[in-house]
Length: 161
Ligand SMILES: [Zn+2]
Image 1 (cartoon, rainbow, N blue to C red):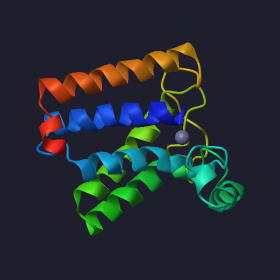
Image 2: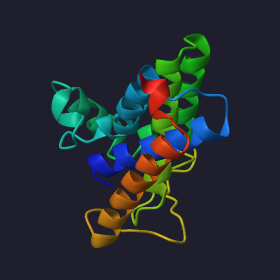
Image 3: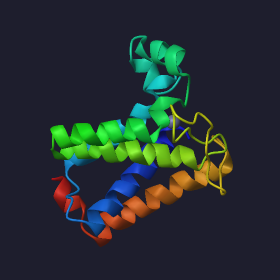
């Protein structure tokens, strides 16, 4: 999944969380989601975030490989643990965005090593899309439309201000 699709699907999923729970769709929450939705790809130097880490992503990739442990439930759990330590809307957004990224990659053809480092095999959904394919473009636009729908239907935009 390309970075803008990760951002769009994660914001849409984050908006659903705000609609279905007492979480508010505030600016820090949304900013956290955007950052969290890009964070797992820090293990790929050519990714949107990887190109902005001043070489750190090269080190991470050389140790763990791309779509390695950063795309596991363990990493996701660690981020949620950080949220327990620093409980604020921004950290909640990061944790949710991180989880949504892994969910997004789970539906890609390559899958994700959910149980890394114990089981390194990549696991994927039975229903998948190919990164950069027309189906990903459709997912991107569906996410955008559902975002706009939820923003107005549930007046989430009022919480952003
Ligand atoms: Zn990824």
